[in-house]
Amino acid sequence: MSGVAITASDDALAAVKYDADGLVPAIVQDASTKAVLMMAWMSAETLALTLAEGRTVFWSRSRQEVWRKGETSGERQWVREAYYDCDGDTLLFVVDQDGDGACHTGRYSCFFRSFDGSVSSNGG
Image 1: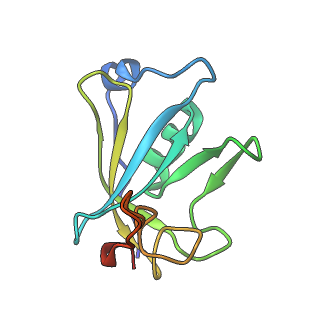
Image 2: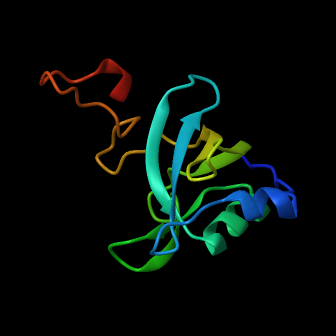
Image 3: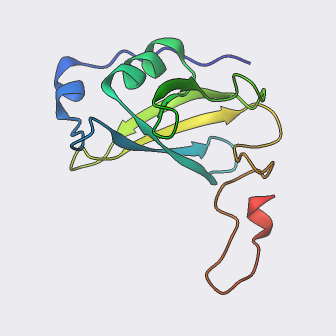
């Protein structure tokens, strides 16, 4: 598998609004199932890397470093489409998920727990 490099206009990149820490939330959605897989943080650097490399690259707040999704687990995400919302403060990446899933728990999606205590089958 491989992703596609996405060329972003200067206006589109300038429209992205980062928080006080220089980060913006990025939602990742599976291209085939349309399931929301995860949310992680991006900096201007990791957004540029993601668009150029065609795979998701995030900023780890806990480790304070750049991390490429799946670098150690093999659960890579190959970018198909990339969007920013109407306010410019949230990103959306539509991806082909490589491997069994996106969640560090081994599940397909990080969004498998319901507030009523049940576990979603969507979460794997």
